[in-house]
Image 1 (cartoon, helix red, strand yellow):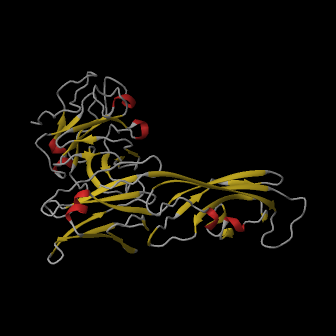
Image 2: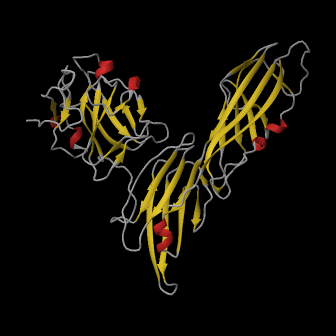
Length: 428
């Protein structure tokens, strides 16, 4: 695949605003003795993929600024550009916050990043100076399309249409610009043509990114041969702007593949260890129930009753039919593949556990697997023994049925009973 170098871009504008505090607003005169000062700094820091038009200079002159009173949805002051902000402003004493944002936010366009930032709340008081920082970040969806060397050498022409409900962009042969989209699922369709110029042989590859996240860069890789290919899905992350790499190719089913319900299964849960305290000894076992390698990075482990969740922050590659052990700490078992820490505590009396994609806020993504070990025929509060899914059960719905679960009978490293990271014993 053609490589694109990553380049860090940093731009910052400092605007100092002296605000005279008073109960009066608009153009009413203020008493001279009632004064206050506010220093407002609008900051922009971002990492992008360097392309033909690499966004090497990001001007904050076209950023708008709005100041809101706490509890109000209407701004008390609005500026179309930070350059329009005068040296002295009039503002009443009270609690405020400020926002900064790009003025242009098209539904779908090339080279059109949209940035947004919001300050923490601040207080304007008589005779005092307050400094407020607004850190702006990417707030729409960034998309680039790359074609593999095999596509470039095998096909005479190719293009990819990326669209959502708001609009569409066509990434033609040689297009290296980044496209930007508002929120919503992204549909991808690539048209590739091969032949001698007289006889054209078309090929179409299509797929969907169901829950793209605002502020994220989706790098779409198109890979195909004239005869055959295979579908891949992989995720990686850059240092500052998160990049998700999605590879579409001409697999046997003619399209791309994202994670689906049942591709992963929760197969064992130690929610009430007896040998060590719960806060150190809890763990969850996950099984790759698909025929392909899966990276668990960016997936969300969630408790259904509270929506408390933890997003897996590092690569965790799971081959087909392999297990991963997710633990509260490294002390939970002799094998812990990933530590999720104190963000998730397992309830001894039962609760729903889920693995899902992030979605928009961590709680509304696509559910890959779930189990409510406090429901139906599950028997809660088995101290010192994990509950385990019968190893013959590989169906996502059947894996939610307590009749297919039982207590472990094999001891592991702490002295409690369980099989973390290995095949469960059969439930009789």
